[in-house]
Amino acid sequence: MREMARYGFTLALICLVAAGLLAAVNALTGPKILAAAAAEEQAGLSQVMPLADKFTAVKQGTDETVLYYKAFDRQDKLIGFVFKSGGKGYSSVIQSLTGMFPDGKISGIKIISLNETPGLGMRVTEEQFTGQFKGQNSMDLAGVQAITGATISSYAVMDSVMQKAKEIKELIKNDK
Amino acid sequence: MKNLIKEFTKGIIKENPTFVLALGLCPTLAVSVSVANAIGMGIAATFVLLGSSIIISLVRDFIPDRIRIPCYIVIIATFVTIAELCMKAYSPALDRSLGIYVPLIVVNCIVLGRAEAYACKNNLSRSFFDGLGMGVGFTLALILISAIREFLGSGQLLGHTLVKGFEPVFVFGMPSGALLVIGLLLGLFNLLKEKRT
Figure 1 (cartoon, chains in turn purple, cyan):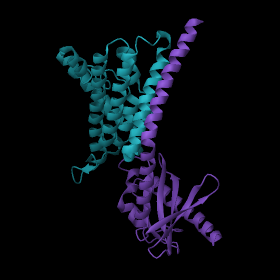
Figure 2 (figure 1 turned 180 degrees about the vertical axis):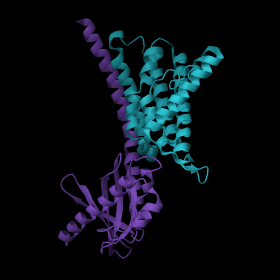
Figure 3 (figure 1 turned 135 degrees about the vertical axis):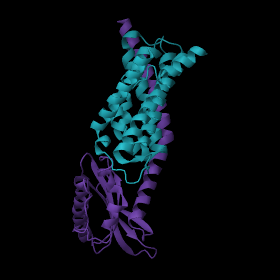
Figure 4 (figure 1 turned 90 degrees about the horizontal axis):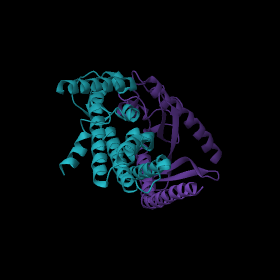
């Protein structure tokens, strides 16, 4: 019995020290992690909508999930929208950020997270593929060529962008 | 001092965790697609190995034998979480490309293996050099495998195209290619060892 108590005490002590240490590291790195994520998001937004000067997030619900972003130019005029979409690729969910003008034309897209086959699916991040989206109608990406040997990854991006664009258009309509 | 250097160097060739002890092969297969991944993973694993070896060696008399494994796991998990948080804060791109494999260092058998086989029986300085040697050995093995895979699989090294017009062999970018490369390198290591004796 006494042995048992000693074991419990030892393990509890180790856990306590570990928890204290982790709390300290978390306090140090927490703000940096948030700042890095925010900076990355801002950089991504201006990359897909280069003309915009300022973005505001349109949020929904109690947990404040971001539905899409409104992009404004220097004169505070609404010039477009930016939305995030995700589609199942070959070995991961491919998430992308799309900038869209009010008429539905795409200003640019950027792949933000994926884990596809190197040399094949990973190539959807290349300009050769993402560059094709510029100027396309977001509802119909017929002008975009899939990458040879990586059609699943390519279509994952295209389908998710088209589907999300439709959803966002509905939302914008209701918003007005 | 000579002994300590030996503790360090044995992890690199004679007892290389990947090619000789054949430990931690799962993360090796998964992250060795690119040299950048391999270096990041190697540094994270070395940090965890070094930290847990030091702490376990320091508290080895304090931990009762029967509950040593849960104690080791808590210590290792703490270092892994520290490594993960630091990576997220200072190198988000690397964190994203390594993904789940950083938290999975907890169950990397090199770390627990060294704790159980070495750090719990040896003093601080020996455990320090053992952990460092094993970490460096693991990192070098990862770099070697990933360099071969990245070059053959995508014609690049560290993201730079080396040979123009080189047609990549896609299988090397996939897990099956990792198995091929590791198998051949293990064979090569065994061949060299046999020749020496």
